[in-house]
Image (cartoon, rainbow, N blue to C red):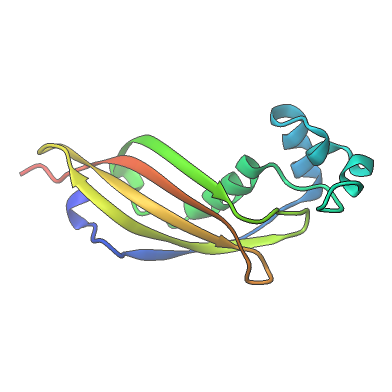
Length: 143
């Protein structure tokens, strides 16, 4: 979708993403190797009582599902930024779902604009676990 076709408030639902324990451990060992993510005995001694998923991995699981319904398609030029806030821990076997909403549109020039997409992500219990805002540079229709 071109920048010119987007409207503030447009929303898409993101399909559920299941946090697989083996993938969670593999990701953690490679990218976020701290005991809270990789050592089950240590995790039992924390307030969480068990391993928690790395935050970036939780977001990326949802991002992969968002790309199935993504606003931009072939009109995406580049990503610009992502700000993620983790509200509650995510555990193995959690099912994350939510929605993506266009929350800002800034036309840069006749060729492209910046689109902000805000995410609200909930677990299977309806608890908000993370929010994120991703900005992308998207093509305008050439006139």
